[in-house]
Amino acid sequence: MDGDRFLVPGGPGRKEMRTSLFFVALGIVLGLVLPLDGAVVFGTVVLGTVVLIWVAFLLAWATTGRRTRTRFRHSPLMTIAFLLAATARFVVTTADLLQITRLSLLVSGTSTVLATLIAVPLGALLGLHELGSARLLRNILFTLYGLPPVLAGLLVFLALSRGGPLGGLGLLYTPLGMVIAQVVIVTPIILGITTSVVSTVERRVKETATVLGADRYQLSVTVLREAAAGVLTAVMVGFGRAISEVGAVFIVGGHIEGQTQVLTTTIITDVSQAEYTHAVALGVILLVIAGVIYSLLYRLQERTLP
Image (cartoon, rainbow, N blue to C red; front, side, top):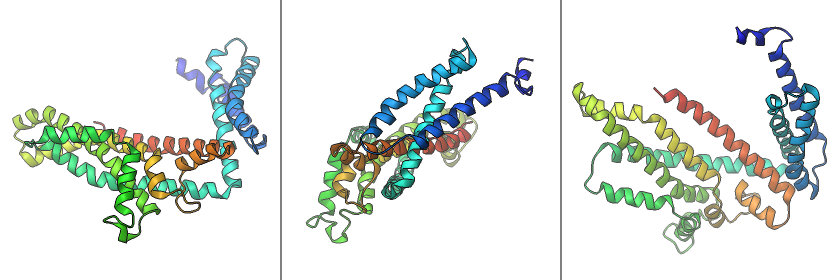
C-alpha cells in the first residue's frame, strides 16, 4: 500500500521528518543567535521573517530539487521556530515581560470565567423558555455586541471612581477593576451566542423529544448536551475579546508600571515610544497565548460533538 512506504526506514516519510527537523533547528539557532537589541529588532523580526521564508525556500530547492512545492511547508516551520526562539530569548532576558504576561492571563482568564458563570446559565434559561419580551431582550443583546470598549471602560471608571457608587471599594486602577471592565464587555457576547445556540437546538430537538415522551426536564438536559459545542464557541469568542481588549483596561487600570500593565496596553505605549523590540515580543507572546488557549478549547469542543 502507498501508506506503507512512509514506514520504511530511510524512506520518504523519514526523510521528510529529518528535513523538517533540520529547518526547525535552523530557525531556533537563528532566533537565539541573531542580535535582538535596539531598533534593528523591528527589521530583524518583521522584515527578517519574510527573508527567512525565501531563504528556506531556496534551501529546500537546493536539497530536494524540483519538488519544491511539496517542501514549501519547511519555510513557515523555520519562520515559526525563529519567532518562538527569539521571543523566548527576549522573555528570559527581560524581567517585566513575565509579570505583564502573567497579569494579562490572570485578568483575561478571570473575566472570562466570571462572564461564563453569569452568561451561560442565563443564556440557557432564555434559550429554553419562550418569554413574552424575548425579542426585546435579544435586540438589547445584539446591541451590546457592539458596545465600544472605551464606553464600557468609561462607565466602569465612573462607577469605581471616588464619587461613584462603588468608589468606597478602592477598585479603580487595580487588576480587579480591570476584571470588572472586561466582564461587562464579555458577558453580553457569551450570553447572546449561548441564547442563540440553545434556542436553535431546542427547536430542532423539541419535536423529536416530545414524540419520544420526554418531559420538560429531560428535554432541557438533552438540549444543553447538544448545545455544549456551541456554548464552548461562545466562551472562545469571549476569551478572544478579553485577551485582545485595550480601551477599557487602559481607562480602568491606568497602565501603572508593575501593577496594571497588560500585553495589549503595553504594546500601545511601546509603539508610541518607538520601543519596537518590546512591542514585537509582546505581540508574539499574545499570539502564542491565544493559539494555545484556542487549541485546548477546540480539543475540548471536539469531545463534546456527537
